[in-house]
Length: 199
Image 1 (spheres, rainbow, N blue to C red):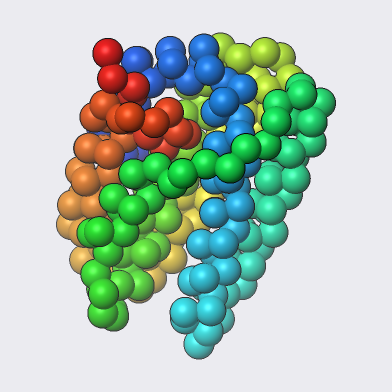
Image 2: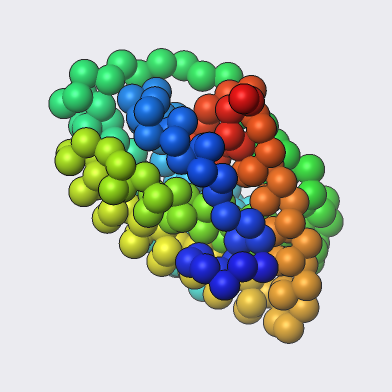
């Protein structure tokens, strides 16, 4: 894995994605709104799947509320910047990550938490990369979100360590390599978590 920030990612985002996303930021803002809803939904789904885990429920309840606040902030920004909300077909990233999640516990719980950490870490990285390249209103917001996503991926990672210490590191390495492939190879759709568009 790389030694950059955030360090759990196996590969950095390609420059080609950053350039395309900066050029097409209005389009990306629409996908970003969808991502915030999905992030809240993921946290809630984990709470329902493991209701006996009170520590997990308390942590993810707070996280889900914060993700929904972010969704509201993105919507407000889209309205101010006159960016229309549009339905989208799902990208390959989320489905691609789910392929590697084990179907039975205790492995499934660990994989869901580590996958959550990787998604939040990729978000953190990309908010940080985009913030200096976007209009002021979006730039300030994305810089703030980069800090929030850093907390989120660390929270998921801490929960994963509680589930499977010390075995979580090897599994994280495997999932991170898979995530890196999805985030760095050319993609037919530009999404917040996609690979770069084809040349």
